[in-house]
Image (cartoon, rainbow, N blue to C red; front, top):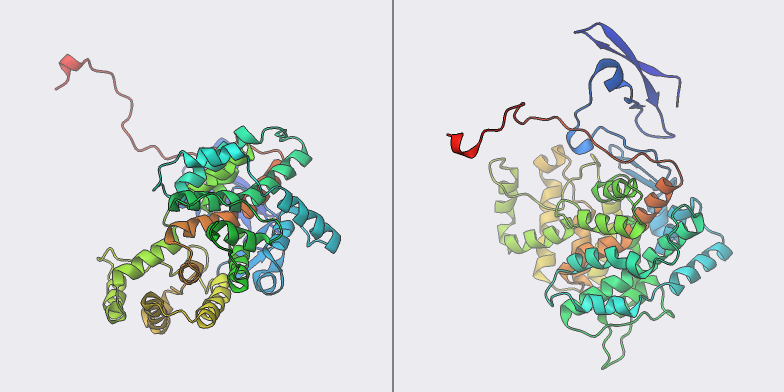
Length: 430
């Protein structure tokens, strides 16, 4: 903690308080307000935690004003252009990029843990046939502690790392199994001769009746999308994982809670909401009318996939994924009216003064939904894809939190209900 302080004076009492300034290696300085209630008798009120830092972290840095995203100091542009998802996973978990030997060992560990207990497949089979894959994911991941409790001493660093590796390895297997149950297809087991993303695609789309060839383009693009979604600082789902983790809960319960938080349409479900919006617009000829509606504050319609809570500039992930989106559409020769509609919506929004002034640029969710649709990923799996990638960030955040003494999360509130009153017997109530 620095030696800088900010002086706070309560004008009603004349009391002063010097609040220490906490500064990280980058980012805005932050006031340590722990002494505020005991000294001046106040708590802080910050709905949505938009101005509150709940932890320190060495994982991910975001500068929303400048459009910067870095994992462990490495710009997302460099990682997206030169790295792989598994290498990024190693980086987030361990703090440094791996040597060839370290990466080989890590990759072997992930591959070793891709299988799930066979009883877990029976558990998945117990869900209703049309259950949403995210509902199944939350339930199945939460149950992992019942299947993999052999090494669950969370005070042991080796056990913690094993749990993290298991989660990263098994999440694609679980996701594919949930999808196949949803589609009424038999379970497909992981082919460990394939890479991380190719293995996942094979588990998703292979059928016993014929040989399935993994598309190199699809595997490459999904690997890129997974890199872009691997971590994103203290977002809603990551904060949920840390909050649950602060209770001492096992990592499977923490990640299951993160999956549930991710499911919301304002968070991980945003790319699914983009496709719903495009379906509502229906045709290119309707785009101007919907743009007009989006500008009307009295109209409940909102353009999904535009703007971002943190980025007040262009989302750096969107810059990368936009190019990938066009590459996929060109290389696959996709002829889809909805894709044409999306591109026209993007063009008009980027040229419209209203959106430019408010910096409502297309974000990563806008393009990821389009890419997934082009690759044949069903809409119901969009948020699941996000969960597979973000599992790396969740377990990395959980590992970081587990290494240090952590107070249980306990936000305060501003009570606005009735003041003290006496109970009145039912027969005397008017």
